[in-house]
Image 1: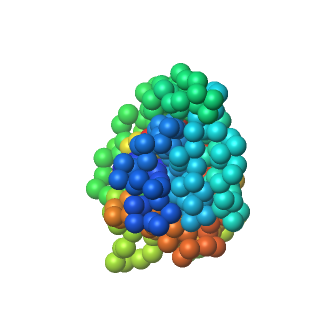
Image 2: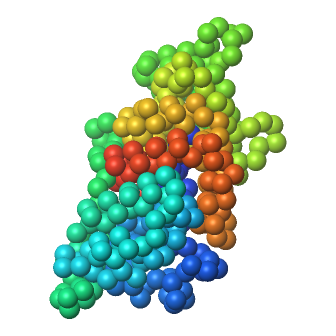
Image 3: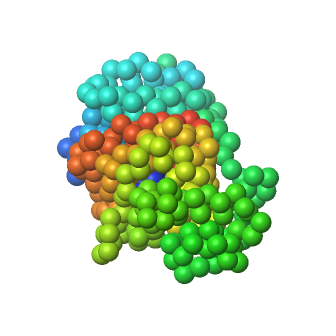
Length: 329
């Protein structure tokens, strides 16, 4: 199963990217032939491949999931894309969140010309030739792990996430020569003063408690609400974590986080400043182990409704600017 959202901060968008992009087979709104996972649809590849990430996100909202169930059997048009007329006849998702997720998905379809490759069109002609299977679609250019602005090839060798934060701050066999990250992590640790609230450090260590495992730490919460005036410092610290600490953010998710910090700073700050948004992301991260990921994600959105807007805004930005690196995670 693919992961798109890194638990705890943004991704972030990231954990709903199940390869099962439709509704669960137990859902009464499933297509009439659920046993083939929708593979009998003329435009199956549009939903399961080129726009699979967007379909997964749509399925995480009940209204958009209902729309998706109606849309999946739509025939191809003359360009080899799902018929816009058919898509438009499907029921409105009924909420701002559902409509946003639907619109992002439709935008992906429009950018994936010929995704119904080999299908018969409404007028009996052949569908478009389509793109390469698994192409990034509308994604922007994210960080390159192999060179240029790539993250370092030598991460910090520490036992655990929080130890990596300290290693960056103290440049202990780690981040050598990277004075900017050492300074950012020191400022994060000593924010305001040694006896002060240290919002940046509290955020990063809260995340560290849950990194690499289920979000149910015995010694504290996974999330921490960062005041807006601390968001910039926290983002700097998080960028250094994404650079040096696979103990905190595993590969290839580090690329996605780095891209979101660069391309979506306002959306990232909103998530860091909203406790319920972070809780929503942790909840969704756990859904990747659930037997029914779409239903699990729907339950997460219902439970953490106050965080929905921030998470959806971050997803919209990431889909536009970072799809090439985030949909693979």
